[in-house]
Amino acid sequence: MADLNAIFTAMGDRFNAQAAGSLEAVFQYQIEDGEPWFVAISEGVCQINQGEHDDPSVTLTMASDTLEEVMSGETDGMQAFMTGRIKADGDIMLATRLTSIFPVA
Figure (cartoon, rainbow, N blue to C red):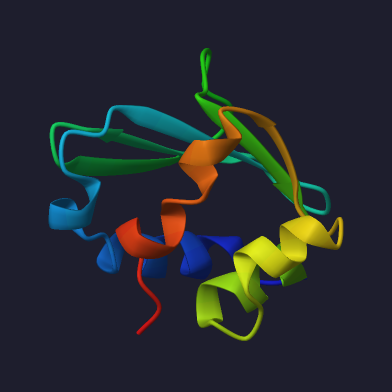
């Protein structure tokens, strides 16, 4: 299992406030082999917390290894979604913005 704390910390470090713009959204990550996390973006600020949000905009379900591969750039998020490695529920179009909001180094 991937180190979720390290992955979400790195995600916070890569947050691009300019790309987020005026976005108000909550991305819920349901990790099949780990703890749930959520990323809340509001007024150009990103907050990352372990746990479940009451009202997420979109919920992304995947294994920790898939998350690690997408965050490292090893796997394309859209490709992982199309092949069923990532399941999305809610505002799926929001999920397509993740690559610009959290660009891979």
